[in-house]
Length: 201
Image (tube, rainbow, N blue to C red; front, side, top):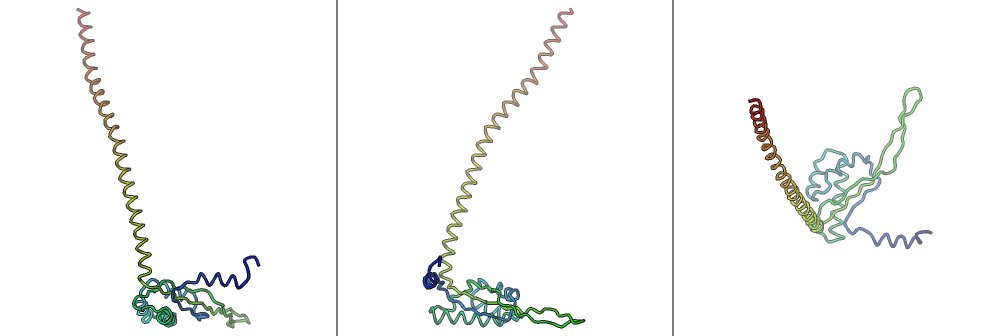
């Protein structure tokens, strides 16, 4: 085999396993789309809030996912020694399962296909402290980037102001020279007229 023997591949795969507690339900008689409506509602929430939401949700998938969440919490407590009060739903998703095909009789000997869809449900839990550390590091990096952006913006404003100041100074003498030329032209005209009148006399 190109990638090695099966045992070697399995050993490498098991070495990269996720240590977070989880629970999985396969071949659930729920379409993926209907399961995702409920999964999206509990993703990222505390275990207590997620249980309350699932308990009072009117959707059929909420009952199945409620039992699955309870199983994930029990796995975290018994297998990993975690405290249920510190857990939250880190990941939850639904994958497509096999489709059972049935037939609905129709008029004139025809038959319509009925698709009974299934899905595989997975819920992964995590502790708040572990996620908080990573979030804190991410917040620090975000703050640093914001500070650098604001510093660059300030320096850009200062340079723009410096560039604009000489332009204003240069514009001022032009106005002065224009005023001088305006006053000089009537004086020259008067002098020319006086010279013409003197010649005529």
